[in-house]
Image (cartoon, rainbow, N blue to C red):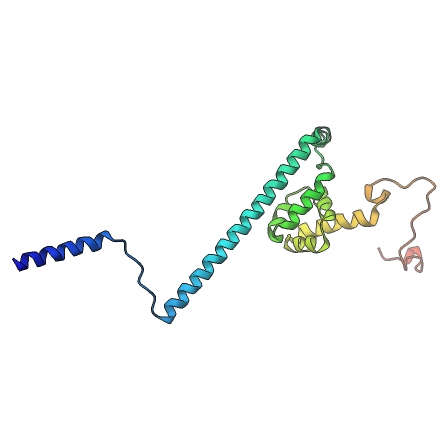
Amino acid sequence: MTAGSALAAVVGNAVGLSAQPLEPLPIQSRLGAAIADDANIRDRAAARRGRTLDLREQAVRAAEARLKSDTAAKPDEAAQAAAAGGPPPPSQYDDLAKIYAAMKPAAAAAVMEQLDLEVQMRVAQKMRERSIASVMAAMSPRGAAALTMALARKQAGGGAAAAGMRPRPGAPAPAPAPGAAAMPRDRRPS
């Protein structure tokens, strides 16, 4: 009889233990504690990055909503630009510049290179120098060179030559390049 009750007690204890959830064993070594600390630090950093990405996503959505509301508020201007196939109205370049400045340079460069060169140039003009420098550094050499040349033409030409227009009749001719007047025409390198 004692053997039967002992057997029943063992079976009862086994059933009771199997019904309880398993708890992790306490970490008792230094290595285990270090691994647990590193895992906790990694998890906190991942949660922080996730919150940051969520905030950026919310900011982009808010900017898109503002752009849509601006477009809805100014249907004539937006419709004319869309019908002409031209770039968006100038008021939107400020918002686009803020969006691209808030993005990581590599991501902004990848998207910016897909845009029309005129739009790239207008957005770049609205961005801070440091921001556009970071974006251009992440662009392909060909894309960065094209944007640089467009910006240089816009800043240097500003007038008739940059717009592809002919100078006014009777306007003074541009000054020759330095050193060009010192050499006779027939000896100038070609």
